[in-house]
Length: 223
Image (cartoon, rainbow, N blue to C red; front, side, top):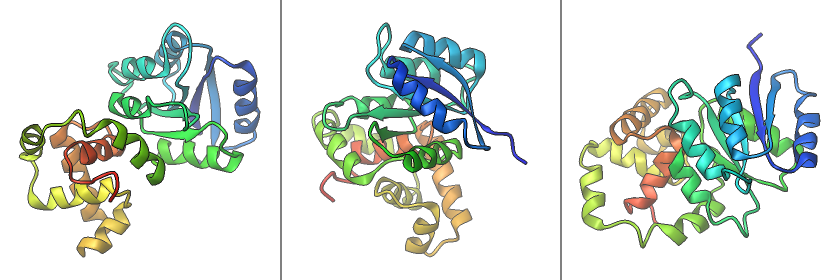
């Protein structure tokens, strides 16, 4: 049997943490290894417990979820820690910044138990968790005014034509299997192209590839 997925809960509301812990403790493949009441604690607990996934609220005292995410993803020895951001959707306009900071995805705070468990397992497996309709809405608010065409062209120059095609499809939310079907490749070959694109662009994971696809104009928010 595989080792359980180690989860750190970071939220300043005790009832929220208790509810999450109660749910996660019933799962054989998930173990809660710590709790944090603010962003600074989240960084310290992540350093000590080295969780697989941090369930991170955006709005917390001392350090907010974005600042904590930036510190954790930039810390030596924590490269494999995945951050799952909790958002209220209508009011958290910082999810895009969180993805840029290295978060692997986000989850609505009112998500049901099945959605939460699925999200943790997906992110722990190294995949991105990005709901397309929410991603488009958030990214459309920030990319247009921040990206110059010349900078985008320079950034993508390191990619082969095939890798650009794959990056476009990643940005559209396709899985490796779906990319393979679209480009007549095996899922393994598609995965290889995704890995090469991540390495060349300095992306931490698939979620950051999605951000880059939007930033550089390969995918438009209204596509």
